[in-house]
Length: 299
Image (cartoon, rainbow, N blue to C red):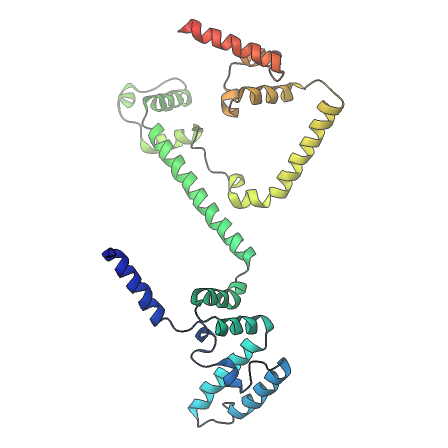
């Protein structure tokens, strides 16, 4: 026997199949669009248009003010004409009649035709970028405020505030005041003078938002393309020696060091690495051998 879960699943599928109405019903409800207009399925566009005008004049609400059913019928006739006058929607309707078992496929085509084109993809993209940028900006502010709150609790930060207070006071301070906790207003004023730069939780910048980066994308691509062309012409075609800044870039790239870490390297060490010309393969191999020997020596 089949497991109970499979039996229940099969029963549910059968119930859904019995309960779901034919997929052609989503076009003209339970009616047939061709029958509403009184034409055959093989009728051409001219015959469909002629039948619609004839029926619309007959069942127009202005001509039948006392008949509530005529208004409903007029709406159905107008809807049937809207479906059959367009070749694409008529082809979809004919397919739904010929393949009533493809319920989900026919329904998807219907909703894509009548509702999908009403939403401009450009508007959706702009809205999505704005929403993501707003979340990005709020997230960056939250991270920054949390990091600042943690830093302000450290003794090093409090010592900096005290030193700044002494500097503003000309190196003189009241002993009683020094023993007391610093006034909150004074602490806030001094905190503004201490520009905290916390790695990994910097102040949010509008230039880093996704929406701004997307707007500046053509400029960024053009700038990168121009830089690549100049680099190729200068160092590949003319074989010119690397400038100091470009040598720094090449060394950092060869060592695979992040930009922040590269800037924090001691100046003499950085100069020595650049002078080694590590972008040349023999020099890089020699440097790696030296680093391995140094690592073994330290062990």
